[in-house]
Length: 599
Image (tube, rainbow, N blue to C red; front, side, top):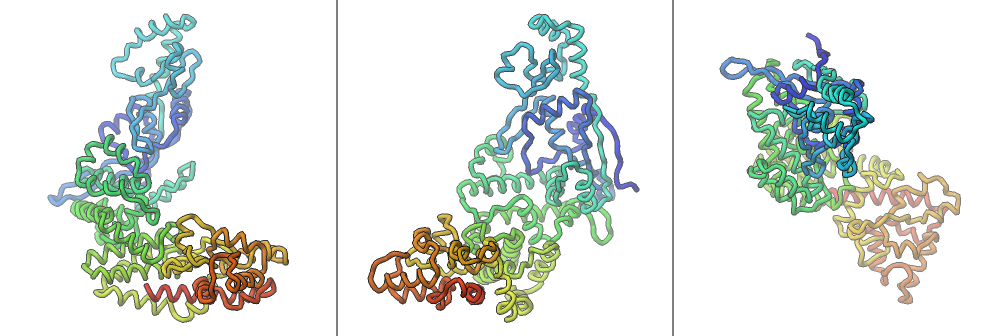
């Protein structure tokens, strides 16, 4: 059986298929994103009989129902949505939803004299040469004869016969040819994804989450559109709470559902630590409810696939939608989400920039939800999730080439252990040995990248310990981060450059970074550490504060310790820089280890 069929149809037939629900346009997560000018250009191409590319449909598999009958699946439009939506908006006058969830018309105007299209504007509406909205031409019962007479009376330079030919050519846009690639229902999701990537001229990578959203949103029987909207609106609201009123106003049907009531708390919630996308939400809900890591399996299950018999069964569709719906509601639950955020904060994560791996966050939330579902004690959940998340970042567990395989392995193991601490301990014994802490971690700290996960872990440890910034006694590292403070160099950059250290990778080592008040950094200038530290000691002795606020030796000793600055800093100059880096990396590694053990 062929993987696909290529056919030609026309715009009129395509619109008819959509109106008859033969081909479904999924109400996927993205609002209409085309600029109005792009809609204009598409209409111009159709008018001039230029090719406008292919659309791709995917046949939902036929599913066997409990009574033995077969349900024939509809086709899903998986590529070409924006084009088809643009055509329907321009020709049928239908409203589209913009990125702020406001409904708007895209009115395309046409000038028959010059045969040009333009996006409608106030000047066009006043100009008698323009048809301000071409959708009027395509309305049922449009009076072509009356329109021609009226237009030619206003524009005598236009001959009625000539105008008639132009109007007929405009109307014939509905008969313009468009190619349809129909993918077979027997194809696995990975094959469909690969076909899409290879055939799509713009190279857009349609993700498995996109396919899952398509599958969800066209299944009316199992509340697919309701699930899709819950996912979609939650993810948009958490990033832009201001769109709440637009959603409530433009989707009154959803606004009257329990699902809407369960997500509306987000409009009054502000977090920049974990802002999940629709892909993140689906992945978390799927991982903890289905105990699987590969999102392609969700698409297969929503299609009713029995992995043992390779048949498609109606009861599997029903069970899968029911489980997914429950998983989505558990994800968006106010108590669950806020408790998870509190766990992140308790691990020193106060900003999204401190965790580069979204996969690590997603698995941590999947784990949290699984352990809650299993009835594990809250204090144990907090302990396990905190440590697992930090360990995942430390080891790059979900940052490699196959995070889904790791998800699959880990979620199954956590589910099989009655006490999750046992599996945590098993992982620690295997991956966080003394060799890791004493050798691998200090080596990983040898990098100039300030956004390195290892430097972020050091910063998280400082936040956890409520450490003060370098040479400060009242401003904490956390306060500097919250106020967008910068990291500065313990060995000042200009000082190193003036002494022959001109390689950026060398003077920008993260072992040379410390969060420092700007006033302290300006006071240090380009001095050698031994010189500016001598001034700090001097101000302790004479009470004149020139660099920071520290005015006693006890505070100074403690400040150097919490910032992992070796005591030898008092005597260091440029020739000691490499020794300083080695010593500080060991101290930073030890601080991260102590932090992990305290979680």
